[in-house]
Image 1 (cartoon, rainbow, N blue to C red):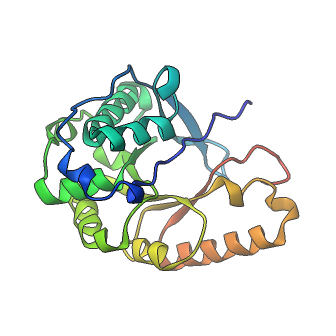
Image 2 (cartoon, rainbow, N blue to C red):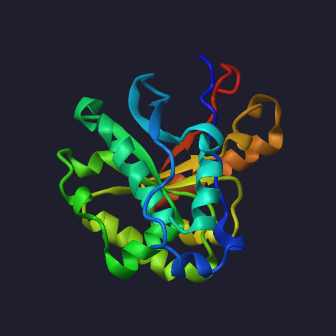
Length: 231
């Protein structure tokens, strides 16, 4: 099976607070969007338990790293993030009752939800068990924004949704803060999964994450498992 290209992420730290001030200047992305769906397989049973929605644009803005870079520069990040969510949710009628849908959410979007609880009518109206939807917090969170992130996570959980930490590639203070929110899932970055069969450092890192997950009641998802020996 060909590997689906992994979503890139744009780190908003370089853009600063001006992004928040310009957030309403452009309301939506300048190109059509669609979603690809990467299956997530349970290790023990081998069954598909859900899918991760991977947003795609067109042309020069095909990959998320380019889409979100443009959105932060031009001030339409909230509009883009909500469009990505609506596009990803199109699979819900065909998802099945016992399968999960993982969707990405930008830190900026989460902090805005916490501040204003804005634009969430479409979330309230979803005709699906909300427990099936897992919001993944992408990298780029600023430590000073953690209180707002915490409020945003509590807000989404109050609506019945689940929460995941995406692309974990280190166990530092930022990750431990997010772990204190008791995420339902932690996703191990692909860089620590590919080639793990031959790399003792990667094995040690993943073992530590497994221990932390068990202590915290958090399930782990390994990204990019393509080789049987890595499995």
